[in-house]
Image 1: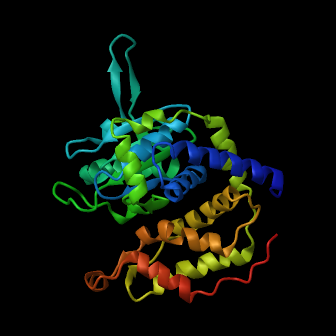
Image 2: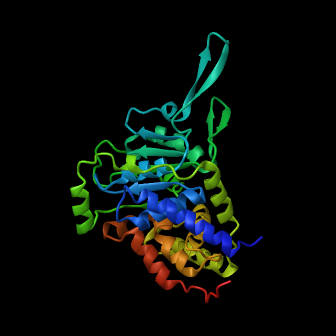
Image 3: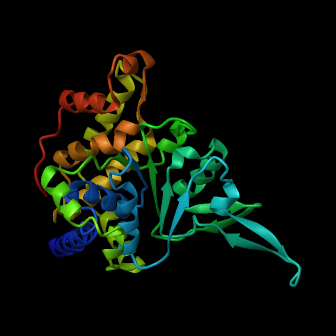
Length: 322
């Protein structure tokens, strides 16, 4: 059944309220906030890569505070164990049975702070849960529930004591983005409010899990014309043939782009997606999935530049609004 305009208007209003609520703590970064919330409503995860002190943790905590329900924060360190993330099975001497004690991954919003500081063994503990929403410990599988989102942060500058995220893990993040430094006026306003050391605490819960799941389900019903899906396919195939890419975008990346395009269209109050939606989301959804050719990377070519070049070379469909 097609989405009605009334449903699209309701979705847009709810989406805007979420953005405005998080914007109380992260001032002047509405586009990034929209991208993160769109990822949540797509059922995906976000990697925030930026310099220290730009508000990555504040953004994650503010989004967690916006939702009614459990949230958790995991500070990744080199000595963190997989069981510290997923949980552990302990023998109960009183009942004479093994009991599973849930780890911090069992929450609706999980902040994985400085994820690249943990060892590859600990990072791999996130692979199953980020893809399937399940945690398997001692042969027993436990669902984490819905909604579920991992917001991971990492510092691109400091490399001492860090482990580069493998391609398989990067591919599980729907979006990779950054906040960047605020503009001059925003910086002055933040300095005037310097006494406030916990900006995220001013963000109150305005939506529950049931409403978030309803928005996720509604976005999944948005019909996207075949021409848009063909456009996405052409972009993906172009990344695999590009001279500067050693490995192009996976099918998981193509599906991620197709899904978030639906959410983005609804967040604008539209019942249909357009090529502009694809162009807007292509870099944050696809760039981190490209494995660059070492020589091209050494010459200064970035994955973002490759995606931008592909968007200029691939002809978008002549689209007519539904």
